[in-house]
Length: 341
Image 1 (cartoon, rainbow, N blue to C red):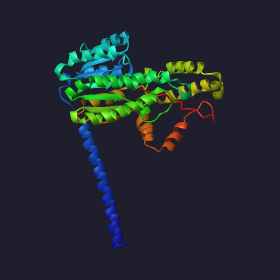
Image 2 (image 1 turned 90 degrees about the horizontal axis):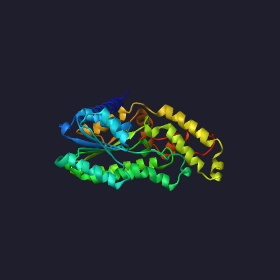
Image 3 (image 1 turned 90 degrees about the vertical axis):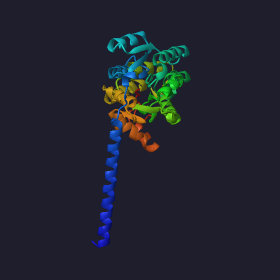
Image 4 (image 1 turned 120 degrees about the vertical axis):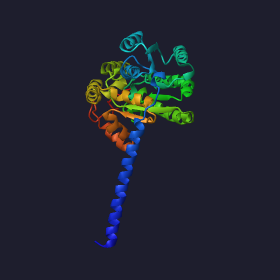
């Protein structure tokens, strides 16, 4: 080897080494920054929506144990009473229907009275629904509205109403999206609503930056919650199927629904995780870290499959999703995996 070739080889190795050191340094700095926590947790108030069960119920109790003043909204009286029984006396519950203006007014007034001049430190927009969900052709406009009114419009509504209080505290807004906000796996309003949550969060984060308000998005994969209850999803699929005109049913075939449901149940049994703390940890970190992340992927499937897939060229994404189990081989169908909140 000539001296010139040796020098080039040495320079190349040096460049690789410098690059590796820089990457390691950046990772170390990121870990240190993320480990820094805020002070005065006991003086801070957080509102969490959708606390009857699932992520919301779990994170409300988790934040209560950390010492936050938690206001948890539920859809039902039972949800309120069950949560109160499982938490400390410091946790407050209140009924909230995100599609009802009067209900929103009552919640905003309660938050104002509790927080006073301090303002609201955290707003966790967790409430949502998934059904109706299924093949797009089976839907009507009203089916999309049912989901969008809660997951997107309702979320925007309560955020705008509480935003002045969050600005006063220079606090945090945590919006729960989904991997479906990055990759649309099936039809219905769920994927549309979560894409909207992503977009709204991006614009809000940039608008609020000058006011010291930080906005984070949680992107869970598939978890066992009420939103992914297979029995409820199957019952609603049957409702959608039964109202279809006969000519549309004929185009799918007599066994389509049966095979669709079987494939869906199989996929959900593999993908859904029982450990919802993977999601609530992300929520807590977004509220307690001095330097919260912009986005949190939660769950092995989110980190290893769906989020990386969202960065791929469309033809690759389409190929992978359409390779998922199909109810009828050779039939052009929509995807079978159902989303999570």
